[in-house]
Image: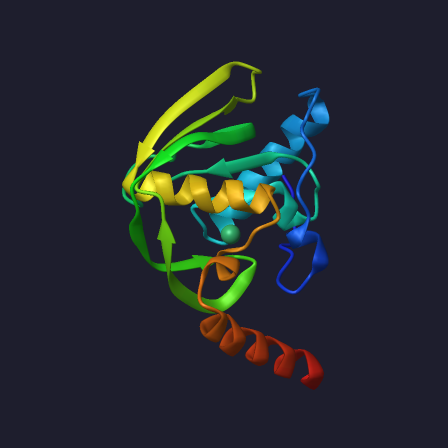
Length: 169
Ligand code: NI
């Protein structure tokens, strides 16, 4: 397994909507393994293919508690088919947005449809933390980062920090 390089803001690829996967072949299975490895190493609870520079509608996640066994979940071509309510996702972060966290307004409950790595259709009714993780990762697949969902003022603070650091390099 290979550790993949995680793309970070302001790389333009992160704002691109991803392409649907038509054929879940060996290359995709290999990519899933490497993405899972990379997510666990980071460590993170979710990772979208676009975050490792691959423009495909694919995400992995695992929200099982640290002291429990791993439970890798894979979603291909996922979409939110319904959502309701709202909640405040506290202190949300992202492997592609290092050194920054913010509260983000999210839907409280969502239903997601997609397929798993065996091409089996899946439908997930999610609320709470799972709903947050799914919304965050599906946002990635649509070219949206969590900093796109916070106030312009807060986003500005982060952007200034990033661009100051880039100039220093
Ligand atoms: Ni993220």
